Structure formats: structure tokens, C-alpha cells
Length: 304
Image 1 (cartoon, rainbow, N blue to C red):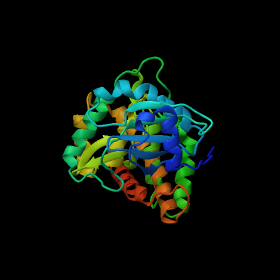
Image 2 (image 1 turned 180 degrees about the vertical axis):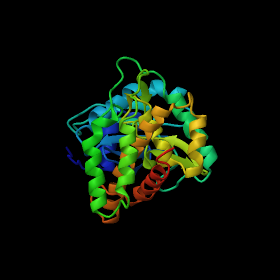
Image 3 (image 1 turned 120 degrees about the horizontal axis):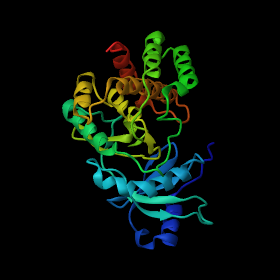
Image 4 (image 1 turned 60 degrees about the vertical axis):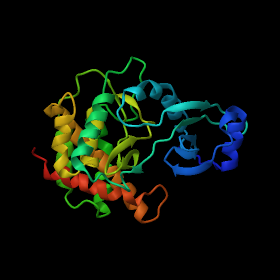
């Protein structure tokens, strides 16, 4: 459900004065409008994130506030670490947070141009993140479970993209997903996962990955969901290096499942990219090219 709220600089300053007055006079400017939240830069080193659209955003912000401070010290890339929590008030009836600011450009606008370093950097980040989560860790939102449970979602996404002329070999795409859906399921412990590693949530600096943002889908589950990012974020000649660098090296079944999650992510981004080209709400034209490239990689290596 989407319920957009108007957020202005004056509103944010009022909220800061009410609850975190020591931050209220810092320079403030809009940074980005995401699916769930708006992000406003607060001075040089902080940002304010406020839910503005989906109703689910409230719980996602509280989840980040609860868990990210314990994960951040162990990660080799910068992430937005919550510093303050803003509680719902008469002025703004939803929670909001102040986090650290993560510099860099989103990879959908500034892709990695140093493939080997990017592959090793991404592998090091996921190796550090993918550790067993405690019993109280959150579950995924339709992610991280058996891939077969996404069959209807996959079929609808593929059919729609094919009808729009965005997929030229749907049988090849279907073959990758079906192979992934029949792979043995994850039998290990529930591991911490980012859950939403598409190019707009990865930041680059000087040609390689430098930060990871938007942990709203943080959850514990099958690492294949995150390992799908290799096909979405890296060029062809860097994917094997990523798998060699990630520890422990993924077994064949995990790689098969990861390919299926990559197909689902690519289809979603292709639709969002197409919507952006045609100026529809929620569309982002920069999401299309990396998604198309990912599907080409996945279908070209269907039997590997």
C-alpha cells in the first residue's frame, strides 16, 4: 500500500528541533526519493531518512535502527549506521531515523570500471555479512525461502516482459530459473543478508564499490539471495573471481539457486527501467541496462 506524504525542509527542521535539537541547524538538502523513504543529507556526515510512501517503511526503519549498529563494525564497506531515532509525533505521525552519510555514486549511474577489484570488494563484503544470525533476526519479505515459492511471480514477470518486447528468448530465461528452482535447498544456518542488492543500492568511488545502502530488506536466510548480485553488478569476466574470493566458496547447488534469484531481480529491474523510459511513476531508466546485461550473462552460461 502506498500513502505518499509531503516532506519539506521546514518539516524536517521542525522534527529535529523537537527531538534532536543539536542537529537542527545543520545544512539540509534532499538526497534521494526511494521506494519507501526520502533521504535528506544533514551536514557533511549525516542523513535523515523519513518514510513517505509505503506503509511498510515504518517497520523497515525500526529494523535498521535495531540491527545495523551491531553489524556495521564488522563490514569492510561503509553502510548507513543509524545514530538517532525519531518517534511519531503530531507533526509527523511516523518514525524516522538519522544515519551516517555514505559517499559515492549509485552503480546504476556509475558502474564499476575496475572489475577485478570490484569482484574482490563485493566478495569481501558478503563474506563479512554472511554470518549466522540470532534467533530473533527478521525473516525476508518473499525472499530467501525456497525459490519454487516464487513460481507465479516469475511467470508473471517473464510473460509481461516478453509481451512488451523486452525479452527476446524467454525459453532461455525460463530454463535458468527452472534449474535454480529444482536445486537442493539451503541446509545451513540462517545467515545475515542484505536482501536487496541491485545497482542503485551499491555505491562506487574511483571505479570500484565503496558503500552499500538501504538495508530495509535486511533478513536472515539462504545466502543465494545475496550471491545473485554477482550477475547483476559485475561484468562477465569478474563473476568467477567473485565466486573464488567469497568464503566459503559457494557449492554448486547454492550457485544454481543464486542464478534463479538473479533472474528474478533482473526481470524486476527490466520492468522498472522500462517504466522509467516511458516516464511512469516509480520508473528508473538507469535500472534497465544492467538488468538486460545480467540476463544475457545468465542465459549465455545456462549449462555451466
